[in-house]
Length: 445
Image (tube, rainbow, N blue to C red; front, top):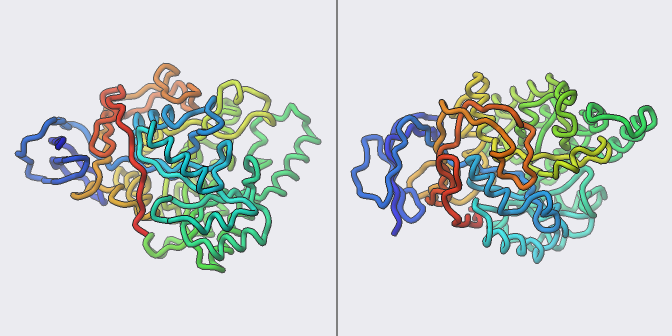
C-alpha cells in the first residue's frame, strides 16, 4: 500500500489558511493534522514555504480527440493540465465525430482511461434530434449534457424551439449551455463584411458577437430553466448585462441556475485585440473593460459560481489566418491557476476565493464524489504552489500540442511546484513525474 506524507504545508481549504501535515494512503487522504504527523510513509514531501490547495477542477475544456488531434490530444492537453495544477477536467462533445450518442461518448471515456494524466468526465452533446439518447444517461457517471445555443460544429447547434423545450422539460441532469444568439451573430457579421470586406480584423469580434447576442440567448436559456425547474449551468459569461440573470441571495446548494466565468474574460479586454488579434479570439468574445470589471464583481458577490478555462487549442497556422477564417478558441489550461494567483498578487482575489471558485464550488455544483476539498477520506487531488518563484511563459515551456499561448512572453509570479492526482505525484519541480493515468469522475446524484 503506497503512502505519502506532506509535511509543513500551508493549506488553503474551506475558507481558511493554516499549517498542517497531510498523510495519504492508496490515493486517499487518511489524516490531516495541524500538530504534525509522525506516521512513517514511503515518501515524504517537505512543503515548507509552499501552499497546498485542492487540485483545480476545470468544468469546460476542448481536448480535440477524436478527429481534431492535429490541434490537441487527451494525452497532450491533460499533460498541460497537471503541469498547471488542474487535476480533473470535463471535456466538451464537439469533436469529430461529435459525441452525441452514448456509444460515441463511451469511446472517449475508453481513450481517456488509456492516456489521460488527469481525472476526466465528458459531456454528452445535444442536437435537434437526440432527446431519446439524452434520456438514457446515467447521471452518476457523466458530468452533464451540453447545448450549443450558438454556432458549433456539425449538427450541434440546437436552434429548434421545440427541441430546446423538450430538453429542458425532460432532462434531469445538469444542462450546460453556450449562449449566443446565432441569427444576431450572422446579421452582425454580414453588416461588417459589407462595410469592411474580408480585411476586417479581430477587433470586430466583440461587435459581431456582441452583448445583445449573448444576453438574448442566456435569457432564453434561463427562462426555459425557470419554466421547467431545470438544473442549468451557463458557461463563459462575457457581458455585464447577462449578470442580472443570476442570483447571489441564496447559497450554491440551493441554486438551480448557476454561472461560470473564464480566465480570458477576467484577464483580457477589447483593447487587447490591437496586440493579440486572433490569439484572443474566443466565442463568446472578449469584450469591454466595463464588462470585465462587472464579471469580477460577480465573482466576488456570488453571481458567478465557477471559474474555468474553455481551453480550446488550434494550431498556430490556423490562428494566423485572416480574422473571418481563423477559428475561435485558445489554449489556457497550463496557466489557469497561475493566472488566478497573479490576480491574488494584484489584490483582486483572495487565495481562499480562488480555491472556492476553482475547486470547492465545481465539486459541489456537479456533485463530484470525494474531490475538490482537502478532507480525510477524499481523493488526494492536490497542488503545491510556490508564491515566490516566477514562471516565464516561453514556447519551450508549453506542453500543449499547439505550442503557443496567449500569455506568450508573460512572467507569472508563482510556480506550480507539485501536482498530485489520486495521491500520485504527476508533476514535480518543472517536470512530469508519472505516467499513471487519471480516473473517471463519479457523481453523487
